[in-house]
Every structure is written in C-alpha cells, then in structure tokens.
Length: 374
Image 1 (cartoon, helix red, strand yellow):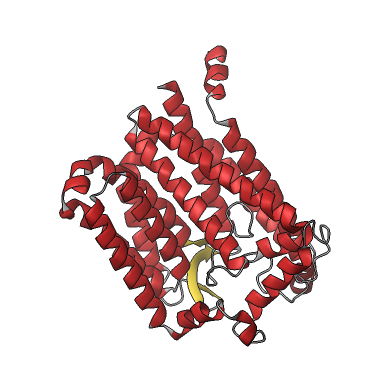
Image 2 (cartoon, one colour; image 1 turned 180 degrees about the vertical axis):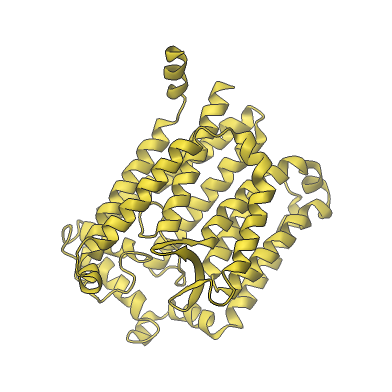
C-alpha cells in the first residue's frame, strides 16, 4: 500500500506545482510591498492585507489537498448543478441588502470579514459545465447550429446578470474562455466565425452605449489628455513602468504605491512590480505565466490523446481562463487594453480569485494524475 501511494504521488505534475508556487510567493511578496502604507493608514497595522491574503492562500491550499483527491467523474456529474448554483447566486447578489457593494459594483456575498465574489464561481462553473456538455453533445456541437446555440443562451443569461452588477471584465473572460473551448471541441467553423462576430458586436455595443464603459475605452487611448481625471489611474501606472527601467528601483522602494496609484495592491499590482523589479522582473513573471499556460495545454493534450475528452476540455478551459485573465491584467497595467477590474492570477490581492485559482490548480493536478495512471 505504501509503495502504491508513493507511485501515485509521482504522477502529480511537479512543473505545475513549482510554477504556481513561485507565482504565489511572488504575489504575496508584492502584496506586502504594495499594501503596507495604505494598510497602516486604514487599519493602523502594516500587514492587514498580507495576513488576509495569507489566510486565503492557506484556505486555498487546504481545499486543494481535498479537491486533488476528488475524481474527475464527480466534476463531470456536478457540472450542471454547479452552473445552476452560480446563476442563483448571481441573482441573490443583486437583491437589495444582500449583495455587498464595493467601488460602485455589487459583486460580493459575505458574512462578517469573509466575502466571495460570485463571478469567480461563475467562471469556474461554466468551464466545468461546458467540459461535460461538449462530451454529451459533441456531434451536435460539430454538425448542427442547435448544439452550438444552447450554451450561448446560457452565456447570455450569465452575461445579463454580470452586467447588472456590473462586471464587464468577468463577462469578457467567460465569453473568451467558452468560445475558445467550443472552438477546440471542433465547432463548425462558419457558425463559430458568425458567433464570434455577433459576440464582438454585442460587446462593442454594450461598451459604446454605456458612458462609463465608453469613457474607459477612449481614455486608455489618450490617458495623458485627462491625466488628473479619467486617465489618472493609467497615467500613474505608466509612470511606475517608466520609473522601473531595466532592473527597477528596488523591492519596497516604489513611489507610486504611496497613494498615487489607486488599487496598487489589487488590479494594478503588476505596475508596482514593474517599478520595483523593472523590466527584468516583469519579464520573468510573464515567462512564468507563459510556462504555466503552456504546461496546462500540454496536460490537456495528453488527456486528449488518451481519449479522456472531459479532462482535456477541462484543462483547456482552465488554461484559457488563467492565460486570458493574466494577459488582460498585464495589458491594462501597460496601457495596451482598456481598464478592467480583473486581478492578476495567483499574484494580485483578492480572496475569491485566490481560492478559485487554487481550486483550478488542484483540478489540473487531478487531471494529470488520472491521465497518467490511465
């Protein structure tokens, strides 16, 4: 029995563990550096945000030890119910007096100091659901419009609820991930291109019909034209990039985190990282994300070759989610993309996102375990 346990443990993917471990350590270090001043002003202690982040990392690792032992068949069976729970909670969070409002958006449910961002559950749920749906309706998805349009109707329901919060960033992540999964599952190319055009047109229409979203779209193109108004956050981020240079100003020596750059420990933590660790530090983090996503896609490919299609689509979906969100966050910090309220996976401060990224990692470890023992 002991020999079997040792042999089974060997089949957990150590590359995945090492990369995520390095990202988690980097994130905790940068959250500590970026949040000390604001934490001291608000809570009269320098390490409030660090302890809070460390708590969620600890919970995430604890859950991972449990989830890595859960067979993939469980996720395949529970996918539809998980999606229903997500839709229900997205409705509940909008009810007056229940959802917690932060910065003008109602996205959180919570009791006491613990809060969960429902959109993070929705991202995970749609990936699990679609992975099962693409197996059950594989022929329909590949040959008929009916099989292709059913998940789109669910995405529309999710989209409406997310826009009511509002959470346009989460909607974009869910749409990109879902469409990517359907493409990899062999959806009809003509239907896929048509749907891509419809989705792109719909997201564009949503953006231009909302003054708030339109302002974000136009501001990122010319942030210096409104550097003390709508472009303030982005200009401060760009200043952080400029100050960092090649090797950075040194860990803990950022000026922009001293109340100049809003959300310095959350959405714009990468800007502080670039200021303190420079181009070299930022490049290493980007390489780590590229290696992580590449490794996840390799795991998905291994599962696909072994005809474990549920595991393959699940891995592809989780990889697309992590990769796309990391790309958007870094792009926003660099002024390449419009400002979105998306965290940098495994690095930015945020309890809900940290929990679900830890859960996603545990599921990926389980995928590798099962396909290698198959």
